[in-house]
Length: 153
Picture 1 (spheres, rainbow, N blue to C red):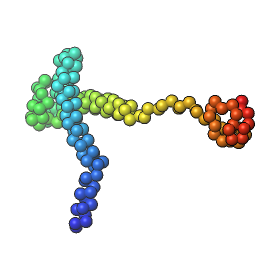
Picture 2 (picture 1 turned 135 degrees about the horizontal axis):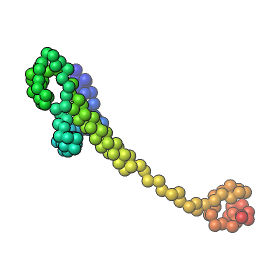
Picture 3 (picture 1 turned 180 degrees about the horizontal axis):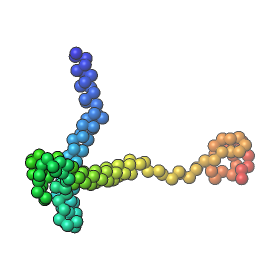
Picture 4 (picture 1 turned 90 degrees about the vertical axis):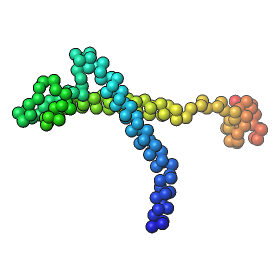
């Protein structure tokens, strides 16, 4: 039992497990911010442009014979009355939220990849060449090989 607890402690204290836990916490907070952005900032102006449409209250009642509700009833009131609803307005909000999160994740990953890409330096000009006769390395400006004394081009 003690060995298992020790292994568990080592597993939890590994860097990648802690990084993952931190990522999950930050990701859930980011999701809440994006949900608020879509629900409270983006969708109201879109609803106004489309003729005062309130997206969270867009639904279709699936059981109109069982429960009678007045036209224009809010989603919460319809569900409280026992209506079975198909909430396509909430689905539209979820799609827009997903697209925004996907765009932000794409941008962050692209930025990280750009920052992590090693800078490729131009290769340095050669300072040595090889003697074609004795194959030793000599200075690039040499006109005669110091090893075999051959005349070079």
